[in-house]
Image (cartoon, rainbow, N blue to C red; front, side, top):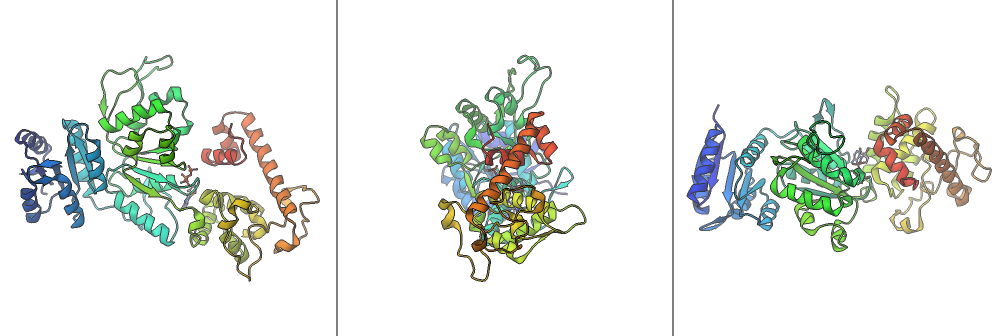
Length: 490
Ligand SMILES: Nc1ncnc2c1ncn2[C@@H]1O[C@H](COP(=O)(O)OP(=O)(O)OP(=O)(O)O)[C@@H](O)[C@H]1O
């Protein structure tokens, strides 16, 4: 088997030699070029597994090579070497399609990590039509065949190949974490860890230790050395979820870790190199947070190299049917099938989903509990009345369909004693909005909220959030969502 071949492009003879020797020692074949022109000749003559180019060259800029390699749709990762402190160049190169960058003075341990991860890219990319597997479990895929979702998947496949930080934006519940997992699953890092951190959930005093780890004796209670999120994600991907919630002092430390690609454990004297791809996510407008002084501009600039926007569910209604079927398959007990009546599907199509896919998941989960024989009808969905501000988001209701989102007429018998005003259990399953007053609808959802609130409070009174989630059969995220929805989060 032939060794991977690397092209080193640098006009500084000393640095070129240092890079060449290091790469040869790694068992790689190396060609060298001292200018953009010479590099073009090499690239025309053969295929390379990696190109490593200096930014400033006598006859042009390394970024020109980045653009040419990408425009030629070659499968070659290309990394740039930037002058010390020129973050702008590094970000520009990543935006132009560079796989990664190294800052001068080039640290040899970082060079080795970068080369190893570039060479992993040359392995066949995971087949995007097949579910990928992490830690023995299939990674849930982003479901949807709307134009927006196809476009999103194509973007993910493209950006998964690089190391450039990705900032995912989108409303709560729109699938940001799932998209981050997809990026990881399609990258050359797929067999390394994916670590998701909810930045809003870590007490400020513990943040540094949680992110960077600590040494034994660093503080009271530090009885052993411990790794932080960066070390745990080494070689893989670190998702900074709700990144806007990071306190300013931690933002400074994070920026430094990103720039240096090194972290220092609390209580340690030396830094250690880390090879982590960063993905951040937030439902807040980060640019606005920068304007208000709540988020550092330099960190924003570093994290926001590639932006990925998750469209809200109401902008891709074509996906609702497919998503509902997939979610029902996931939520139904093994061996049992559940489905929506055509009118129930129509009602979902017309609903505005302020809570996006997570809300659809919750609606279906609750509906399953109420539905007879797994057949979910409009009343089982208990859709909320449309808030006045959201009215515009509702599409026109097809004339053949019953009034959808506001038509929540029937109380399932299982829901227990509801006040007479709410409705009658004997009401026909496909009652229309004319038959049920808005007051009855509001009363019904108020009742369900009250029951949910009481159950949550009871579960939380006995222990931690984790215990409460377990007792209620929810994931911690689902519990957090429900607490937020009912304004019980504090
Ligand atoms: N396209 C999709 N296909 C299948 N499931 C999805 C899709 N989008 C979201 N989900 C599901 O919806 C739920 C919420 O998704 P996720 O946690 O990724 O959203 P989020 O945007 O990160 O939310 P938050 O901002 O509240 O953290 C998860 O259970 C996820 O599996």
